[in-house]
Amino acid sequence: MKKYEVIDISGDAGIRAFGRSPEELLANAALGMYSLIVDPETVRATGHIEVTVRHASLDGLLLAWLNELIYRFDVHGFLARDIVVMTSSSTKKADAEDREYLLGASLSGENFDPERHQGKLLVKAATYHNLKVEQNDDYWTAEVIFDI
Image (cartoon, rainbow, N blue to C red; front, side, top):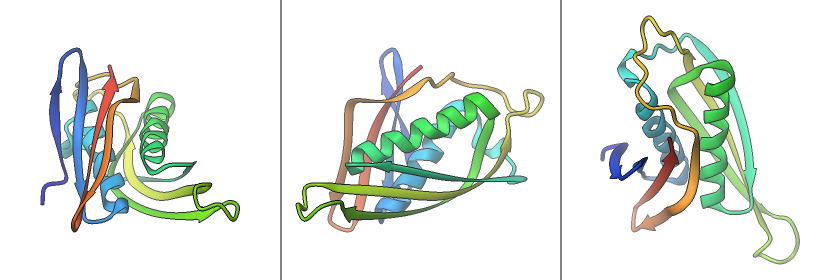
């Protein structure tokens, strides 16, 4: 199974990510997003960061995750090559609808180097526009559109 593919969106950029679990889906969505920014083959795993994100829904968690990574790129220039994601969910109250999803991730990569990384697109944000997160039998898919 492929990890992700770029989808053609007029005026913006999008990805379709795949995974056998929500964790693999979230990691592959991040790799797909990074592929819009630089050629992933040029990124080395010389540094390491940890990221934690929370949200009330799985699709919201996906966007919060990607937007946190965009923020880390904008502020620190960090690009990931290897990503390990762990998720959990808990019920805040007795009501099962009041759920919170937590993502913890370990990312290996490096800061953007203009001499080695040829920049592709300037990704501004992951959006709710046409956002899809679906489970299909034994795999998950997600579609995300980014403002560029």
